[in-house]
Length: 385
Length: 128
Image 1 (spheres, rainbow over the protein chains, first blue to last red):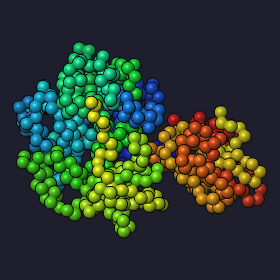
Image 2 (image 1 turned 120 degrees about the vertical axis):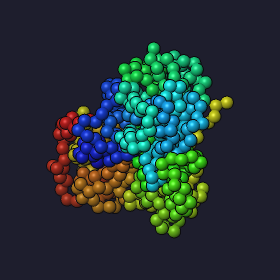
Image 3 (image 1 turned 135 degrees about the horizontal axis):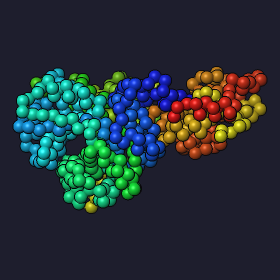
Image 4 (image 1 turned 180 degrees about the horizontal axis):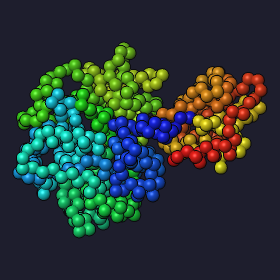
């Protein structure tokens, strides 16, 4: 049997890891929690130049912990930038597809940064903190985003990169507050979805937002790097399950969330991806002209969800065929869904396939597997009464 | 550590000789590396395989791995229980989680396979 770990060792590239192709340099970076992960039995892999935990026990059990109780993720590899000064709003507004000038203090928005041609350079979260504007960017696009910012520099604005002086820990699942209650102040439970606030964490300033990448309730906490170990230790004592990138991927896939390098890249525009809500064409931003043209182009493939029969998953790169057997698109992400207990996939396909119930087949290795187009997300959490 | 009555391929398949037939499976090390087995594709009964030929697949949440025939011969049986319960291979890789039976033509020659000590050493050496 060829083990995916063997692949990793052989050529230094983790080909089997779903996600943007990482480059493992001779010295991958570590987050402040690296040793904690190793001490807690994590399998470490290279991801976007970082050594990250992919799983501690089993991906399915970590996934289920998030859906049923609470799990925690080290997401410190993601880029964290703060912007200050009178020019900060304009600087960001120039690059983000969404409007930010009407954001309240504490509000968070999902947005995109596009190139002149309208293709997505990164998907980000932008927050209006009381003391600064914040941007969280994909680790794989960190350097590229800094570059784009530099190319569109505005006077009277400063960008501070706090990625390496902080940790970011996500606590996700229906029991997130039970776990965080002794660690975060009571005001946090009153935070609305996509709102954040500054809290006192052991005398230091922590940034907490009611956001996440799992489809469950929970928070993402930005704390000073030297507070990281104590934070995850406290959470672990309260019964939160450490979860790695493996579960992070299956969770976000079930929740229909895009992953850069799969559902988004610089050849895909936000409208194709179904992210038009994050684009405000009433304001100016880099790539707007191209986006107006692309939005009108019905020949561009669109993102769809597919549920498969059986147990075999379709994965990134697998062809999507229409009911006549003609090539109609390509899978961007796929896995066996632990919650639905069926394989699910996201794909870009010819627009006429984007009809719920449309029958398709997936070319998976030597087989053609039947599937049906379905709405995204695949999973939506139940609202608490 | 690994059962001493078995022989082992570098690619983590085990072989138990039973007269002219061999039972084939995956080692504990292999299934522990995989975790989360979701699907196993086994060869069709009647198929002839040569040593080292890919003759099945084991799929986990993250990836698909090939299974290689550790000996040459005809596939005379496959473990039907795995289609409804692929996790069986992880729970009992040397027993109820067997994969296939191969009937060997001619004299049974397992000299190209490692004994338990050799396989244990290979596993110990691999960085993991």
